[in-house]
View (cartoon, rainbow, N blue to C red):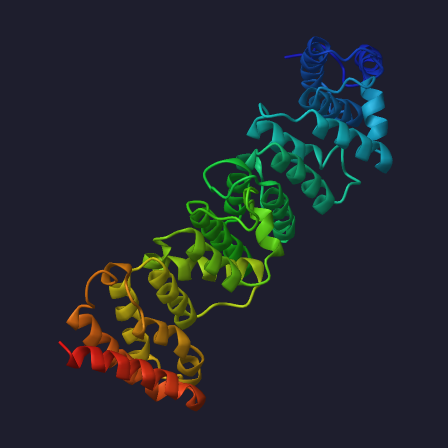
Length: 363
């Protein structure tokens, strides 16, 4: 078969030169140019023609409307012009953008945006996708972990509530899910999300009339302050010591605060139980700590909490006599407290023990 054109046919050269400088690159015009070049490509391997085909493909991909293919070619040879074009392309990305378009941009990085460092190119693209919550379009690499963490904190500080199922905390959570092999730092932030979500189910505020938002936790000085506030504002929270410990651990890791140990948290729960007149819970929890804790300094520093259980009087007992079983339980508890309390406080414990013993002897 004889080719319709010679590779150096003047018609090809004249036509490609005209197309190169054609000033109005509408989508229809680009499609027509692409078809013509496709025909010419069968008969010519001219480098100019090959470059023109690449330029046409790039112009179609990004809907280039800033002049001719010659203009795009000149941009591809100038660093500042490439940066300006990239920012323009990124501005046009919206929630309807497809994965195919994002993939095309990475191809264009090798043909049009050749002078833009790949890390900078990817960072700009990821920031744009994150700003639109297009998490599924993010092409993640380990070197971009800091970028994801920065976005996480932006969402965290903007959040109006702690639920991980909606709003900014959901966005923060989704940004971390993009990371396929999370580092310990990322895992600590994932635990923080879970803790903030759990706390959103409690009544919790630090200033009356001012709803608590996640950013408020950044100003809290200690985990103890948070846990005590939860117990103070939620009458039945002391029943969930295991959950509160898990929440406190997540806050500790995510916010880099000093931890609260199990002993201290359970001591707070004992105090909360007494405040809510749950003597049986307080008694059982106090005995458990006294019987299982080996650290004498912890026990000694918490003697007053145990003593409060030993001298507790239920409002229900004011109009009747104290149940005999309760007196016996308090006597047993006070005997344990006497062994661990500071010497200077022994007299007050002995006095309470004697009072209960007298009460029991009169039955």
